[in-house]
Length: 93
Image (cartoon, rainbow, N blue to C red; front, side, top):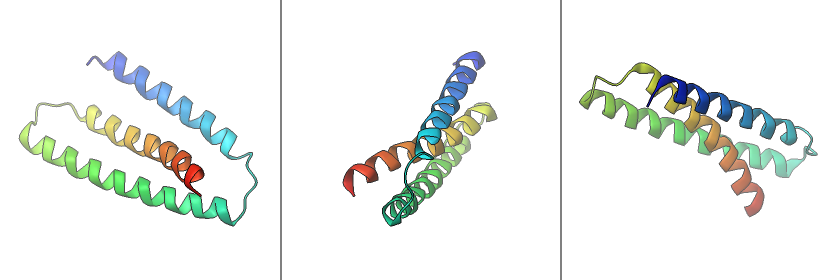
């Protein structure tokens, strides 16, 4: 993977997150939305913890991977787990 591809993926993901967050702010805030927010943050926390553990194991076995790959993986795991978590819990509740 080249750095320009990583940069493009990261910028596109951040832009998608801000667009998603813009439309999320227009929702009416009630108890259901608070429950969705809390359940989503639980998913984000677990995803971040598991991805950090997996990336740590990967780094132990292969130290040749640049650090930017690990940072991008953590950012993308957090962004997409929040988006997917909100969409999932909104459809379930």
